Image 1 (cartoon, rainbow, N blue to C red):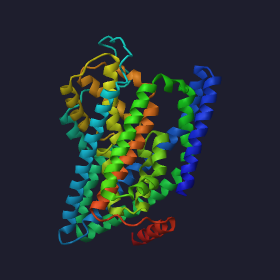
Image 2: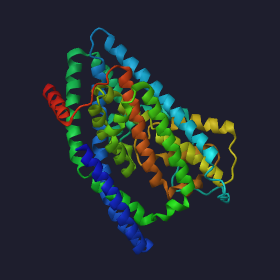
Image 3: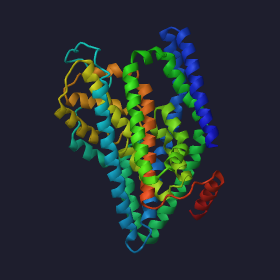
Image 4: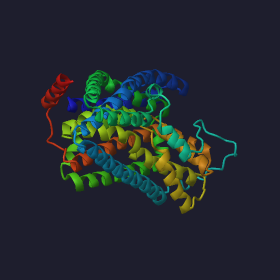
Length: 431
């Protein structure tokens, strides 16, 4: 099924490009926007279906993962939870710093914005994406949900993660009652995964519509106009993939290549829909098929969607410096380091939301007195860049989850399709 699904995604992308280019060359701009709007209906419905299940899926899988880690009644369970949490956060912080530093290094070396010589805009000029200066106080207070219902309704993944951690830890300390709640959460998670299967049947159609919509309105010429910027960014992402997989190879061994194959379908799904959120259920399934234990995958992956968005973080540093270069503004090294530290905080919680990086970039531009209207320079190609960074987010979280599973000695042999179904049936029976 996974191989067939991957082939359908690739075919949908190719057909979307071909049809979109044909429409772009034969329609005037107004007609192209109208047709693209019809295509977008399909994409919007698909992403709404994904967001419909993502909050309950993140909540239930994380609660189950924490509860399973706290199963030991002699105190070792909570010790294991603390150990896994600490190892996970250490990896996330290291990967985040590497992503930000690599983006900063590559944009300074490649200098894709130099030579554009854009005139400085009036001080009051603004872009369509608004961002305010972010600070530590706002970030910390935003961590805690005012209402879990509100957090789930708005898909605030970071707030859902915080609430889930509290519930999961409570389950480990409540004996029988905690096990009842954990079993219920496990049953709901299985239902959500089945619903995910239904939703994914229309994914190739949504991918076809997303690609066709973008190419119909913008054509392929825009890729040439911004070739240096896009080429530099994709080169930087390729290097980041190399670093991530090398780190995974040093810990997991040659088998890390099989992990990439196991999550190939969700990587393509994230790339084509420009949303790593859309790939979450398939990534979870792929990692479990690869051999990562369910309790590790259910714990690490949801947290990674808030704290380990490697592609998005690299893009933030790359895009901010590109805008500064385009306007001929020199940013001192000290300010670049401050920018990096700010983005370490403000990039959290972007979890898979398309274009969320633009809000973070707008806030960073405001903080460092750079022209916010510079966002207009990248808006035209942001869809194509969002595709790459979403796929990178999936790779980064898949590597992180596999590494933590290896550290915890919970990386088993790969499972066949029939073994996966059998395991799911056993879990459903236990629940």
